[in-house]
Image (cartoon, rainbow, N blue to C red; front, top):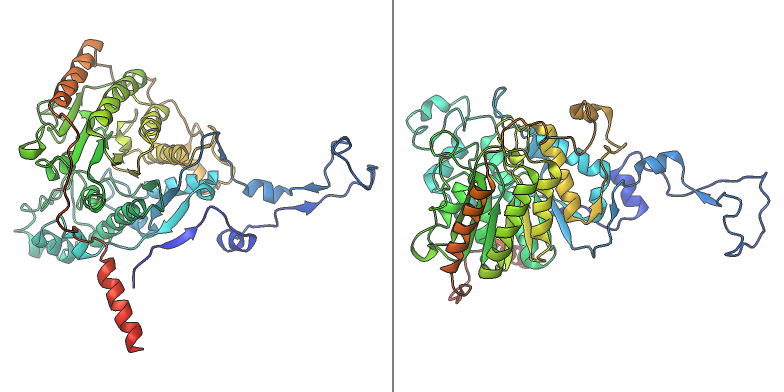
Length: 481
């Protein structure tokens, strides 16, 4: 029975719980006796600490295991972290830029800084085929479920139909990989719906290019669309924001003709020379969804200040006009400077500033990953944005709890915030005039919206998690027992 995800850690844990999770656990306090120091038997507020010693002190092992992160002054929100470690153990191929082990580095940083102490962490289950079928075609799902590197030749006629090739290869465990990251996004959406979380995080998700019956851009299953469909069971309006360097075409296409989901994508646009070649300013949706697809086409080399200024000047009026009741933010890391496939000059702090700005509106927020092809920088970014979600400060130095095995991946800087966008790798081709024009075109689209669209629920949409049927089956089993 799969009614609930398995909680791995909680915000408040007892010493015995710590000992189970951390084999290096030692008691929080040890006594430290200093016979050469004469202290009153009964200490007062005036005499406490005069000698510079303490009756209770932390031993070195305990100090090294304490969280590096600490709370900021902001009132904390309920944050949950959704992940299945098995999703890290897949391999697209030696030369393929997508490296799922970037999630391993991300989790090691999160644990190293002690961020798990400030959020609920869940080991999520795999999504079922029925859940994936809420968006994806049956033939396509059947293909993904059956195909393997060993039998791929027997599916040779279907490979072009489903866009399988160099970008989207067949690799061992492809079905398991898809169901694991999709299940994490569905679980995160469920926590938002139930009110258990204000912010839910799934860095393994965010694969925004996948279509209904077609793989695309390293993406096979569109977990974002599945999560939004789940949110729409309760929320009348969902805003999807995409800050990947590539256009979020799969999500936009899925909700192209509805006004219940507004998609807003900031990305590099070059119709002929940059994937996927879509997302110009005149790509605005259709039917009931006309003017509800918003695109911010950018050129090479945009820097921190211009990106943050443009992002805030667009997102603020979009939220004011559309009045979403929840937000999904795709945090693709390939918009960072020095990314293997990217072409922007953004630093980690600028990317994180966008997350912080969206978070400041106080709406239920789902954070998902996405692109990012320099694993050490991807993990730095997503760890930093986890700290933003949890209202904690982590500093710039790598945590001492990060073992040498993982520390070497962050050479030669060994810091959380290396200089990524200041080396002039790409010339900034986004003039102030061009960016102002882009902004004005978005404002023109917003003028067509009028008031925020409402929705009259006639029936309860499908339960993606199958909770009702599982509950009924469990009751029947109990009655038989």
